[in-house]
Length: 296
Length: 296
Image (cartoon, rainbow over all chains, first blue to last red; front, side):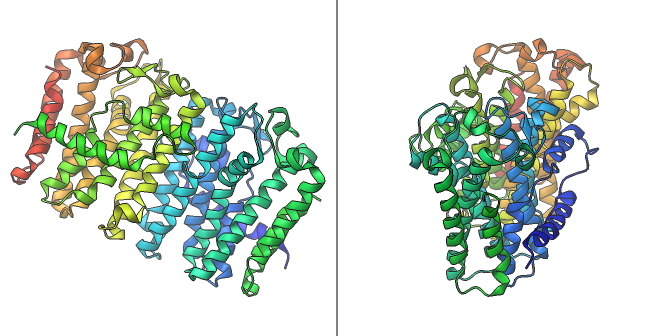
């Protein structure tokens, strides 16, 4: 199968869902919707929603009813990017090749756009119009999955430790904590959301969870490598920004070559976790491989 | 009945629920839990959770299973205070007589503590351990109620328009928009959460919703008056801070006397909305009256 074509196709579907979820930019209070849309439609790859969809597809589920839930993962991802970029946090001026939200709309509006996106995710997850095909108990389980991954035991927690580590010598377990929480938790949750939606058996849920953990790690190692070796065009922000901020990354501990080797090893483990799944899981397999091809 | 004793008793119950919901301050990542707890346990009156409880009690419901949901309203209220106080927003140094969260923990940690509290509310609302007595469909409806009140069509929206109005001459409809969204929405939702939990009939839900709207307005007018006439000790922040920030308030439009008159009028309307409720609604009635006694 052609993974790039698959990704493009799904991205279109996810973008359409997102378009329908976020009020138009002239809805009162318009500035915040404008700011939310600015960051949401800045060319994101929609990795998390696509992982959710591919995971449900791997179980043979019809994914029409999954789209709003999958899209809510992107709302949460975007909220976290806007808040992480703030001057008080990572102080980043560029994201995906454009000025960051607070650079365009000011700090107050960027904080509120982030808050608005986070709230919107839970509005969507509890909206009977969007979720009517799903039994409420399953919807609650999916909401729980997302809230946990987004909160203090997930993304928020990762960012807290990342902030506290700035300018400090950190050890590898601390880097791992940051990785598994700041990026890993929501990626893992994305795969699990698809699995819960697709009514995975306990065994399949375990396998998909393992897959999600390895893919999250592969994704993060690849990101760390690209911060050093990528072009500005490829990564949409300044090359070497982690390094300049004194942020420890995977290559800082293991060097580029060993990091590349590990990225591939972890990607192989993700594929191996899907043993026994049939060809419907091929998009997940190809996705795991695709994530690390960029680092070669 | 003695409304002060009632409020004290319920506050203790709510505080106990909150204590059990927020991880201890030495849980990793500890700084954020410390910051969350700092703001959460700063002496809040727990108006929103108590309104939810009193509303369910008015319907004769056993409120034990409501406590985590009611407490989640306070988590969301506290998140909004922390973010509103930030330098990029209202830039307040004091809250409830103590330095604001960002003054103690820095801006980054205050943003994350707010994000953490907002996420935690939805973690609680989807936690099967905390909500097992409630049918999932009702839980989803309650979650929806809270998410809507907290997001861009509620609190976030109110703060957006408040920010945009700073230093500008605003008209009364704009002030009303700010009031009904920034404070009113979550107070209205609190009463409705209790009503939904207590399985209110359509008629009762409508009445309680009206009650919630009037109480929210009375609360806000009283707050505006106290900003001028209260002592620093009473209001826990600098007297006249709205005025100095050029924030338009109710008294700025109508003067103190007329504002007082309206506060009482609105409080009476809240009580009148409960026509046909029996004595179990007395705490709601007394609460509506109590809110405006402070402005005499």
